[in-house]
Image 1: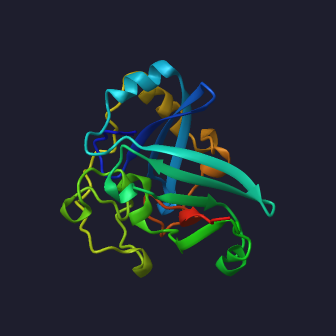
Image 2: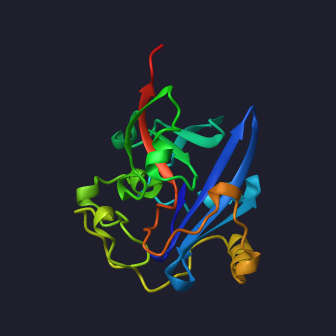
Length: 225
């Protein structure tokens, strides 16, 4: 669930994740940092924090519901996200496969799971960022479509025709005071930032807000046996 912020240069969300009746809660904030890099900081929060944060939900975004399947294939770790209703119609039937690798795209293509049909690679494509997918408005009518958080001109293969509003000057998120205090403590020193395994990462200088150094593939359906 995306939360309201006072800046186009900052995104915040809270996530409830669980299985078999057990849940964990995470608060995530993303913002530009030193040398043009984008920093993502994640904090484990309590159920009470999560309930409080829901009061700051951004009404211009749908809450995101998805089923995540994590698995190993050819010694490679994958996360398959299957989007669920309620959602915008652009997400109906959408399946995204995410992995982290130093292999070239050609090498990676040979190691992809054979039981999935690959539609295309969408790494770096803002149309497949979770932030943009969850927007309630149609993209061609929206001023919130995010191409690049850092305000740089995106590289040609990362541009869209949709416009983007100018960012606000304030970088202070509109969040509960207790959560803000925790985030300030974490963000006050780079050495204190927690990078949550493969999901916590810095993107390269030219990357946009919602894409990272990773490979994402869209999937339509499992292959029929």
